[in-house]
Image (tube, rainbow, N blue to C red; front, side):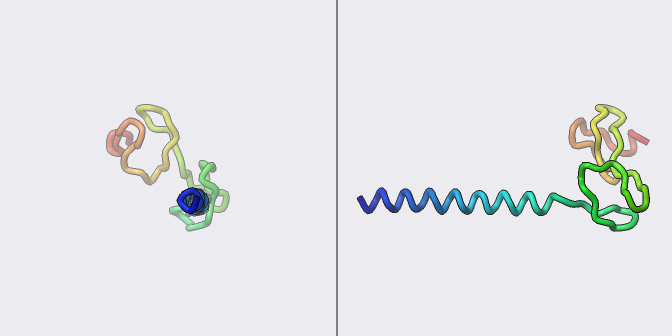
Length: 84
């Protein structure tokens, strides 16, 4: 019986720690900073609401939206030199 209690307690602690780690990851990725004015921005936006700097643009090769300051497209590997 004590073994079952230890296993149950271990599972509860594991679940609590796992949810805590996931919440931390979510909080860290909730905002980004504009490279032009350093304003906090929602990652879903493609343009900074403060200075109107373009944050995302479609990749010329695969057309997926990527941040303009990225050197490589993470989806197809296209480089910035090839894009512009």
